[in-house]
Each structure stands twice: as structure tokens, then as C-alpha cells.
Image 1 (cartoon, rainbow, N blue to C red):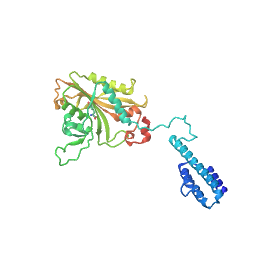
Image 2 (image 1 turned 180 degrees about the horizontal axis):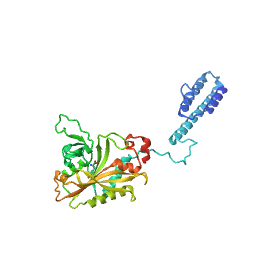
Image 3 (image 1 turned 60 degrees about the horizontal axis):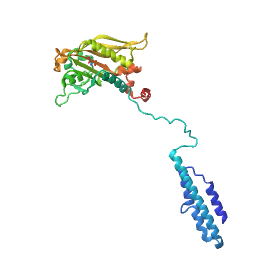
Image 4 (image 1 turned 90 degrees about the vertical axis):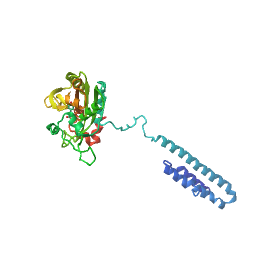
Length: 335
Ligand code: DAH
């Protein structure tokens, strides 16, 4: 009978346990109720009485061997699972980096713009994206039927039966927030008003049906055009660096007088061109009057800048649509 125990012993010894599955297979084969150890022990009745004692001892020794092997394998697998480290792993290698999301280039640009104006003492205000005609146009000195309204291709909101909805628009600029700010407070005012605006324009590399602006308003007793120029120059120098090439030229907006625009040079000296980044001016007396601020006592300057433009110039992006496609290959460049 000793051949049987010897064979079992050999099989147990040569069994390789390198995974949870093999461990379970080993346990079932040798140590379960119907396993080979039990069935060998079950044969004890058929063994000659004088050999039983020795046979029993041998089977028990084999059983212990199987138990020890099982325990050793269990501990070994448990440990390697905890570290999940293979013998071939080089633990001195740097850990693989986590891929973290980053702020969208437009958000990063807006944060930079806000930082500049925080430092210049401006607070932040906001207003609704669905506006009425009064705030978007009338209070900003756009007379009814005036062609200046066509400067901004407006999305009108379909009239409904609800009261006061027959003149709603998606705001075409952030300037209506100036009106809300001044109507709801008393001077002085010194705020920026970031937000999304909408224009019914065809979508091209340069224009999109929605974009972002940051409006600025400073109203106090002695605000001057010189201060406006200083503020704008300081702004572009803080965003683009002191060597930035800019120009300020006269322009027209119904809500400012005089009005101006600021351009930044895009590209290299010979082949580049001027790109407009903002409009600005001294708040028109009619605007102050429409919100109950006395233009004899107060003066102000205002500006409105395009966040997309500023971002595109900052990063060298030549197609505005890239900012809205959410293509990871593009976005991952703004770590
Ligand atoms: N609202 C103007 C636009 O969207 C930009 C602008 C120009 C805002 C002059 C101003 C300003 O506050 O003073 O084109």
C-alpha cells in the first residue's frame, strides 16, 4: 500500500500553485471530502490489520503535507496580491502618472483676466443671459429702429402668451449687466462682468454663435479717458507681457462717447496683422441718465472684451471652433 501514499506524496509535492484558481484546484483535488487524501484514508478498512497503523501514519503525514502546502500557498498569494508586484517589477521606477483633467483654455484665460482686475480693485457682477430689449439695447442708448441695433445679429426669443416676453433676446453682449449693476446700486461702481453672449452669425474660424465677454465699468466723480487708457494698457501688459504690441483707435458705440477699440498684433512683423480684442469708451450721459445716475455729477468708463480672442492670441489658436469641439487632443495641450 505504500506505493499509493508515495504516489500521492509525489503528486502533492509537484503540484504548482501560482494563482487563486490553482489553489482552489489543489484544495479540491487533495483536501476536500471527496479528495484524494480522504479517499485513500477510506481504504484503511481493506488493509491488513498489521499494516493499518503504518498506513494511517503515512496518510496522515501526506495529509499534513497537503495542508502545509495549502497554507504556504495561501500566504504567498495573499502577500503578492497586496503588493500586486511581480518579481520582474522594478520598484525604483517612477509611478505611472495619473491623468488629471485641467481647466479649459477659456476658463484659464478668464481666470487670468479676473486676476488682473482684482488687482486693480474691480469686483465681479453678473446678469442673465436672456435679456429684455430695455437692458440689451434701449438703456444702452440704442434708439428703437436705429441701425446700430444691426451691429449685433440678435437671437430673438419667440413671443409667447406669457406676460412681458415679447421683447426677450439672448443677450448680444455683456453691456446690459452695466445697466443692472447701476440700477441696483449707488455710485461709485467698479466691477467686471464676465459672461456668455450670443450672436446669430454663421460659424467660421473667426466667429461662433456664442462666445464670452468680460464687461468692465468704472463710474465715479472724476473718471477720465486717460485713466481708461492706462487701465487698458496695464491690462494687455499684464496678460501678454510688457513688450506686447497694441494700438488704440477711435470707434463708435451708442453707449460710449468717445468710443475706442484696442487691437493686438498677431503674428510676426511682416506677415502679422492687427486683431481687435476690446471696445471701450466713456459712458454716454444718456446711459447714466437711463439708470438714474446724474451725468453732471458722475462720469465713467466702460469696456467689453472678447475672451475667445484674448485666449486665441495668448495661446496662438487660429480657429475659434477648436475652443468648442472638446477634442481631447486639443485640450490636453493646456496642462
Ligand atoms: N458691447 C460691445 C460689443 O459687444 C463691446 C463694448 C464696447 C463694451 C464699448 C463696452 C464699451 O462696455 O464701452 O461689441
